[in-house]
Each structure stands twice: as C-alpha cells, then as structure tokens.
Amino acid sequence: MFVPKVQIRVIVFDYDGTLVDSNSIKRDAYRSLFPQNKAFYELLDIVLEDVPAGSRYDIIREMLTRSFAENWYPDKLAAEVERLAKCYDSIATEGAAICPERPGATKLLELLAQEYPLYMLSTTLEESLRYIAKRRNWTHFFKLIRGFPCNKALELKAFAKAENIKISEVLMVGDSELDMNAAEKAGSQFLYLREKTSIREVLDHLAGIPASFIKTNII
Image (cartoon, rainbow, N blue to C red):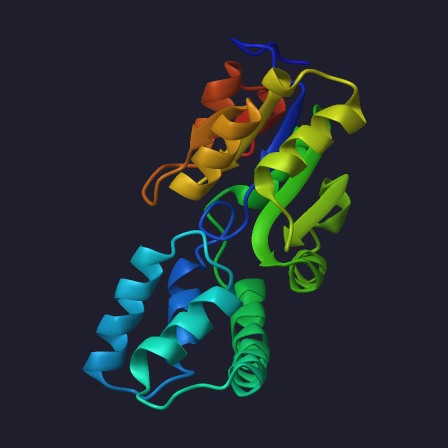
C-alpha cells in the first residue's frame, strides 16, 4: 500500500466534469428545453452564472420566470418546471452515461478501490446517478453513491462518520467551486481537477504511484 503525503483515508469523487466530460452535455440539455435562439442561449448562460449551485429545478424555474412575460400561477409554474425537469433528466442522464470519461478514470478507480473506501457525490439526481454508474460498470467501485437532493457538505461529514474517521481525513475530488465550497464547509481536504488537468493529479496528491498503476501506461 502506498503512503500519502497527508493522511487520507476516504476519497469522494464528484461525477460531472470530474470523472467524465459531461458539463457541455448538461448545458446542451438545458438548451434543448427552450427556443433555439441566441437570446435564450445568452439567458441560460446568465442563469447558470447567477445560480451556480442550483438544481435542474432551480435553473428551469429561473429560465421560465425570466424569459416569458406571462404571470405564472404557482401551480402552473410548478407543473411546467416538473415537466421540463423530466425532459432534461432523460437527455442529460443518457448523455452523461455514454460521454467520454476523463482519460484514465476507470483504471484510476480500479486502483484506488483496492486501497481506499470510495464514494460518489454529485448534484445529479440520485436515481439517475445510480443508473449512470451502472451503465459504466462503476457501481462496484463505490461504497455509496449520493446525488440530488443531498447537501454535499453534510454528506462529506456523514461519510467520515460512517467510516469512523476525522473529516480532515476525507479527500473530496471535484471540478467546481461548488465542490470546493462544500469541502471547505465540511472541513475535508479538496483537490480541484480543472478541465485540462490530468486525473493523474489524484495520485500525485496521494504522493506515491504503485508499480501496478505505472505498468498500465494509461495516463
């Protein structure tokens, strides 16, 4: 077993943008719900920037209330949000299940699952997240998969409690400020995987690359 620079006993992975290249798929899924024109695309960019931690329900509700002149009655708005959220989920879920992984993700998970308890934590609807992991044959790598409507900071603390370890011994790996803020709020460690960052950074953070992994030559 390799020894990390800092004591890490549990690793938690975000999904979209961290293990797979799916962020553009989610944006395109939102675009498909509304009129296909520049004004709506620009509005979507604004909404996504204004509500960075928003669920699909939050984003769709904002799009509806900002883009249409009609006065939405609460029941009518709720029904339309629910309808469009289901459409979004069917598009985004399938895309996230088959899109390219971050190069080396599967082999990394195979390796780390032998050394650490792994968890998946995402804002993707939990039922959809479990389906996606099953489609990729990743379910067996993770002790638990948690998705929307969970609170990431609270879940990180729950993982630490379940493993009977300190929260500071948990490493959250993500690709967004939302992930970083959740880790900071919980008190866990955090590794920021930016768009062009190799997933090998996870191993570098753990300080020590097992010979079995070097032989794969996948990163």
